[in-house]
Image (cartoon, rainbow, N blue to C red; front, side):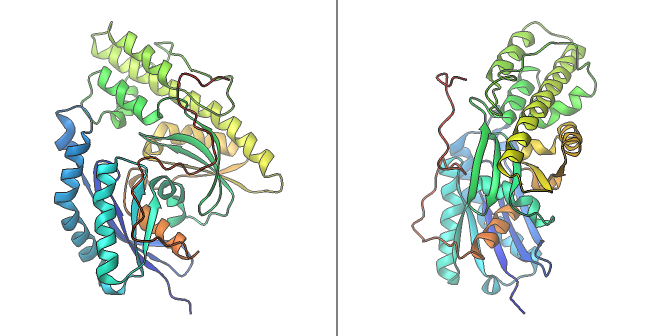
Length: 358
C-alpha cells in the first residue's frame, strides 16, 4: 500500500501566524490534524491597517509557539512527517521571511524536503482538501490582495482569464468599512451592516462592467463610496451605504463570472462537467456565496467553496499544497527566496495602472 503523506504547513504572508499538519487520506483527500491560526488584529487595530514591521515582529515572537501547538494537537512526531511546506509569496516580504526561514531551518534539522508554496495556489487548491475535483476547473480568487479569474489546469499550471486592474475586492470592502466607521478589520462586518439597510438606496458605479472581458475594477466604486460617506451621519444611512455597496459587489462578480464561465467553456469544449471554485477571504461572504452558487447552477457549473475556516489565511491549505506538489516531485532548494510578487500565471501581462485600456 502506498504511503499516505503527512506535511507541516507554515503561513506568515501577512498578519496571521499559522501552522498546520495535514495528512493524506486513503481516498486522496486531506485530514487536517491541526490548524492553528494566531491573528494580529489587536496589534494593528490602533493604526487602522497592517503595519509590516509590526506584523513581522509578531510573527517572530509567535511562530515557535504556534508550530509547537500545531504539532502537539496533531499528536504527530515531527520525525515522522514527510515534508515541510511554507508560504514563500506573494505577500509582505518581511513577514514571508519569518515563516520561510524557520521552515528551512526545520528542513535542515529534521532532514526533510522543503516545498515553497505560492500563497495563491494554497487558496486555489484548498477545496481539494475535502472535495474531489478534477482538472481543469474555473477559479475565482477573491481576497484582500487579489481578485482574479483563473483556469486551473493542474498543479502549477494556471491560465489567467481576468484580473482587477486596480484594487482587490477585499481592499474595497476594508476601505468602505473604514469610511462608514467600522473599526479595523471592518471588511467582514460590511455584510452584517448591509442586512439592516436598503440595497437600492444609493446608486453606485460598476466600473468596466460591460467591457474588458472578465477583468474587474473597484477604484471608481471606492471613490463613489468616499464621496457619499462625507455627507452621511445617521446610522441608517451607513446601513444603506453598506447594503448598496454589498449589492454592487455581488452584481459585479455575478456579471463578470458569467463572462469567465463562457471563456472557460470555450477553452474546454470537451469538458462535460465543469467546476467553479470560489476561494479566498471574501469567499466567506454568505451573500456572495449564494449569488455565485445560483449562477453556477444556472450555467451548468458545480459550485465549490472551501469551508469558512479555510477561506481566510491558514496553514492547512499550505500543507495541502505541499502534499500536492511533493507527489509530483516538486520540492525546492534551501536558497529559495521569499517573493513579494508571485503571479500564478507567470506569462500573463501586468494589468494594473491608469494606462490599462479596453
